[in-house]
Length: 145
Image (cartoon, rainbow, N blue to C red; front, side, top):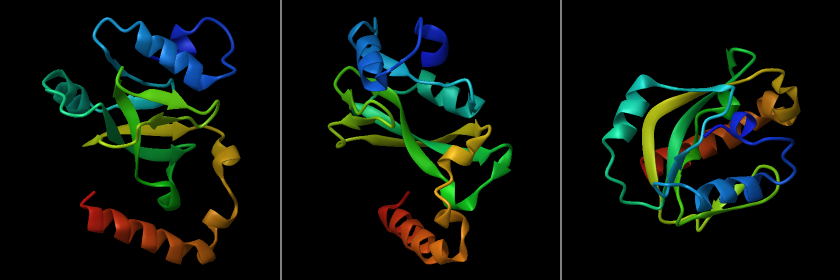
């Protein structure tokens, strides 16, 4: 599903729209994709053969801003493969609930945020953010992600 393509009109509450799609899914599962995202062929092949064991899956996302890799924004996991056993919360920058349990898929989605300055919090581009980034990365390593 692609909200920008598959929803007729302007979206004011992203959670509400995502939940409506989930409620009307024929399979009980939705793979979300935006216009600025490209799933790898390896990911799509993996999903085709997946026997789901979790209510949703966070998929590794490689984030680019105007085609450039920004270390402080990478990588992350995004709930792109979800079942009707979860619901979205939040009008903008929504998240799924319940958050646990969930599965993780490392085959990536490439996300290119064109004109992504709105996502730049400013201080993440400074040297002062590097210790925070190192701490976040060490947590991912300790969690095995």
